[in-house]
Each structure stands twice: as structure tokens, then as C-alpha cells.
Image 1: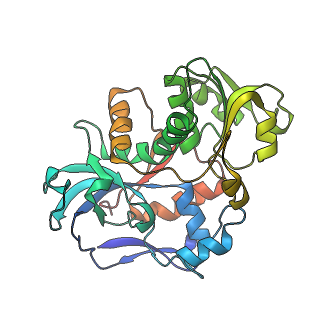
Image 2: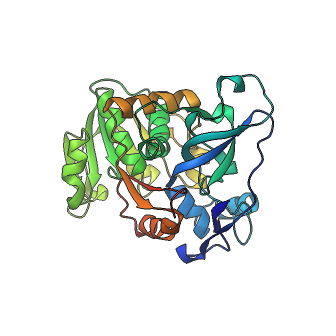
Amino acid sequence: MRAALAGRYGPPETIRIAEAPDPVPGAGEALIRVHATAITAGDSRIRAGRFPHGFGTVARLGIGLRGPRRPVLGVVFSGVIERLGSAREGSAQFAVGDEVTGMTGARMGAHAELVSVATKRITPKPAGLSHTDAAATLFGGTTALHFLRDRAALGEGQRVLVNGASGSVGSAAVQLAHSMGAVVTGVCSEANRALVASLGAKETIDYAKRPVSILRSNYDLVFDAVGNISRQRGLELLTPNGGLVLAVAGLADTVRAGGRVYAGAAPERSSDFATLLAMTQSGTFNPLTRVLGGLGAIQEAHAIVDSGHKVGNLIVLPQEA
């Protein structure tokens, strides 16, 4: 199979497209022919060896000292089941030829023509929903859904500030918070204010004119999808019972999370995939899909992520030349 291989930690140019062995599905796994995959901020951090503050040593020990131990990055995919490993409980619901969408977790491997993944990590792709929109839905969607619904228990009428409202996680947070009945303020660039408003933000703030450091409003929830709001600054923006989501937290803030501060990794649950995909299919969730081309466009995708100005979700199509 063709795959995008990350070498030593470095710039986007360290990624090369080359032949790699086809993965073999084990028990309870499915071999998926990948039709669409997302390039995320997490992929960019791993490729560059650029991890949230305090995680550098820990991450390199787990991922690789000089470069990713698993050179095929990518955690989000949408495609077609090509082969099934031996059955385990729950895997019999799928068959060869099924169109499915899912996430691979720490195994990564989605930036390739084929990926092997546990069937508990996949869900049927709704008929009529494109592979590109399906793949674009999950990364930001699962993160935002976890923090808003499961951790913060966001309620109707609550005031929410989303920092980084035009990115993958931030745009999902704006839409999901709005769908839960919250009053959303989105922080973004001037160029993206109309877009963020169209996603459900009642108010938008141009960070160049009103940086978060000078805001004084009290919010029931502050959702930082960028990683540039400190714990102290975030807490200063809250009502007495408000909550702070640090979606890109450093090691210290992750360890100290608790009470009103939420941090850590979001789980990858097939039930959440199904919820989000149904919203995309119905038109109530916009994944902001941008398709760049085949695997050869993956360096460009990483460069866009590195620029810090990515809007929505970047998708490449491994089956295209």
C-alpha cells in the first residue's frame, strides 16, 4: 500500500509518500480501505515533536525519541471494509463492503491506503454522507462533545466563550454549544467572524482587536481550543460556578485539572461517532470540510496546520494519485 511516512521530527518536508506493508487485521479488527482521512493539530504536533508544555520527555518516550515510532500518522478515517479478522463479540455486525468511519487512537495509521482497526472503534457511515464529510466530522466533534456534554454538563442559556472558534475543535464547540441552547461567543480572526457567526455564535471577537487578555465578561464556560489561555486567566473570566476547558493543556494543567477545570484526552467512542455523523447528515453540524487532494497533498496540509490559521478540517484522499 501507499502511505505517508513521517521520519525524524521536523517540518512537513520530512513526510514522504512510499510503499509500506499492508496491515493485517487481528482478532476483532477490520482492514479498511481508506477513502478519506483528516490531518489534525495532533498529527502536526507528533510530526514536529512539538508537544504541549511539560509533555516533551513523556511524549518522546511513548511516541519515539528521534521520530515517531509508528511512522504512519493519522487517527481519523472513512472508508470501506476490505477484510475482517477473526470474530470477537461485537465484530459480527460488520461485513466486507460496509462503509464505515472511525478513529484509530494511539495506533494511528490512517494516512495510508489501508488501515487496520478494532471494530469497536468504527461505526457505519450514514448512506448519503460523503467519506470526506464523515472523516472531517470526528476529530473536533468528539473532543467538543466530550468536554461540553460529559465534563461540563453544559446547560441551556449558559454563556460560553470559545477561543479558537474557527478551527476543528473550536468550530465543533461553537456548533454543539449552540445546539445545547448555550449563548456562544467565538474568538477568531476578523476574516473568520462571519463564518463563526454562521455556526451559531451570537457574538464574535476579533482576537487582534480584543485579545483574551483584556476581556472582562463573566462566562459560565470558557473553552480554550488553542492552548493560549492560562489556567489563571481562564478562571478570571468565569462566573463563580463556571467551568474552564483546556483542550490543549500542558502537563501541569492536566495534572491539576479537577473541580471547575477540565483537561485531558477525549475518549473515542463509536456511539459518539454515530451521534455526530447523524448531525452532519441532517445538516445540523457543519464539519467545514476542505479537501486538498491525494496523499501527495499531505505536506501542504501539515504546513497549513503549522501556520496556525487552519479553518475547519483538512482532508486528503489516499485512493487518489
